[in-house]
Image (cartoon, rainbow, N blue to C red):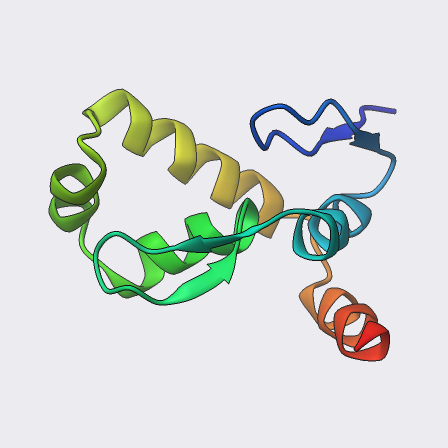
Amino acid sequence: MSRWACAIEGCDDTFDAVEDAIVHQTAEHERHECKVCGTVVPDGYFAIRHAFDEHTRAEFVRAYDADSDAVRQREQVKDEIESVVDLQSVVERIDGAV
């Protein structure tokens, strides 16, 4: 069974379930302020999701001084997570922790 890495810089935590990794990112790490619009979101998956669901790839590239490889890497992470995640359970766990 492959493990899911937190993947936020400086964090080496890994998890058996992607939902555990996302809850960890949300609960244990600082929030991320979007450089495009200023919205504050949890770092990690939710920051990637926000960037690519709310903004164009060109906006992301300009705001983050990113290149096409950075865009592809984040799109791949987003797609991989969304192919297996139960987002409803993540939301319920996060809401239950508040």
